[in-house]
Amino acid sequence: MKPTHTMVNCWFCNQDTLVPYGNRNCWDCPHCEQYNGFQENGDYNKPIPAQYMEHLNHVVSSTPSLREPVQPQQWVSSQVLLCKRCNHHQTTKIKQLAAFAPREEGRYDEEIEVYRHHLEQMYKLCRPCQAAVEYYIKHQNRQLRALLLSHQFKRREADQAHMQSFCSSAMKAPVQVILLRALAFLACAFLLTTMLYGTSNPFAPGATLPLALPPGGNGSAAPENGTAPGAEGWQQLLDLLPEHMAEKLREAWAFGQSHQMGVAVLGLLTCLLAMLLAGRIRLRRIDAFSSCLWALLLGLHLAEQYLQATSPNWLDTLKFSTTSLCCLVGFTAAVATRKATGPRRFRPRRSEKQQ
Image 1: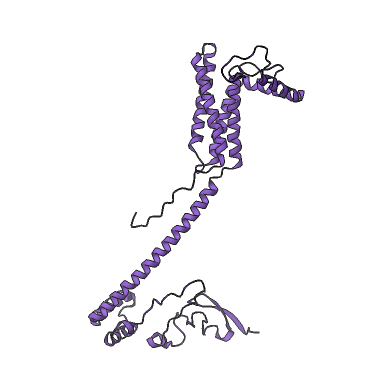
Image 2 (image 1 turned 180 degrees about the vertical axis):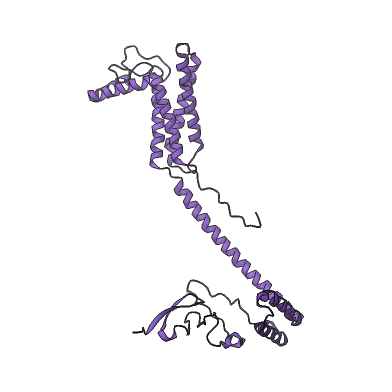
């Protein structure tokens, strides 16, 4: 049993239409009003008078939406631009080109170009019509240039909005980068604290504040009886901790104090890993400066271990200054992690002519 209707596709506008099964190769598209019916060689399977009679053609356009304003028609009939004589010549030229038969089929393109040039010389436009055609072409060029510039501006604004949204989302550092920067700061703070306390253990019973930071804060010497308010507060804080926790803290302090070079290596690797995970977009100058300080600090520890007992005093001073500066820079890098450097300046795309 044959189907009564079938779905066909328009060759001109690529729209699907449901037509009776018997008219599947001879139907008019309701969207573009074009006839669809072809032979095996690609020609129409019936005569189309509109191909030869200009007055049978009319402008077909899609219905404009409510949001888009109605644009003026860009198409103008030749009867408006040309006089009666030139219009007749153009019709004759089209008919002669349509009836052209080459002498050799293999040289069709060459022969029709020569014949078209011969017809152009024979049926030239008069001066008023030629001026009207040139003016109309210039008018169309101006309109197309305006549309092209408008499209370029819209594309540039879309690219700029996309770039700003991408930069704002890309500048937010991941959580692992924040944790690594905080870990690098804690490692540097531990090294600075070990330098301030020296060989003493702050978690040991009866521990006092370091001599480098006197309790009075004004450069006066620490009391000999160790009853300063700061020392008493530190001892009270240690008494609140469980015994096993205090023991673990003392062991951790002793281990870190005896492996300061390992802590320096850990800080350098942590800083470099944070830079690697942050990526090129989130890379900041302060991260590079912090890595350089960590490398310098590791070099000072290596020099101190190489010299051992013969290390000069200026080396300890330089190491303390470098550690303090590295601690300050690490704290700044850890705190300012989520602050973006601002959207990058948008660079418009250059055209091929500018390149």
